[in-house]
Amino acid sequence: MPQTVASAFDIETASRLRAAVGKLSRRLRPTAAGAAAGLTPTRISVLFTIARLGPIRLSELAAEEGVNPTMLSRVVADFSDAGLVERVVDPGDARAALVEVTAHGRRLCERMRRERTDVLNVELGTLSEHEHQLLEAAMPVLEKLAEQLKGRQR
Image (tube, rainbow, N blue to C red; front, side, top):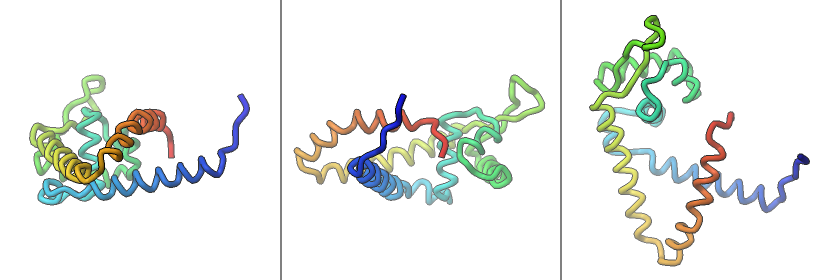
């Protein structure tokens, strides 16, 4: 199958979309619950990944997050001390450990998700009816793009 060269329009659209999604992500990242728990954006990301994929091996978690395994070990130890995660024996290999989120960690994740959703919902309320319709129409395309990008290496 021949490769096509992206047009200047495609490059411009891709650039604008990347910038807009990045800004949205950065502006939604801070939460009162995360701040109260002393979590940095990286730690929040790690906790959400454990909640989503766990129980998970530290090596898999490091690969998923793209972080240094030594640093990740310290983060997981801090999470464990705070009661957010626990280490469990890997049923497939008793020598290995998995990490999974605790009920306390899951509640914290839910609070942070709810805060982010609430902030976004307030701002969505400031949009016009036409802007709401445009956003609703774009959602399937954005969701498709997100799914297509899933699993891609950087």
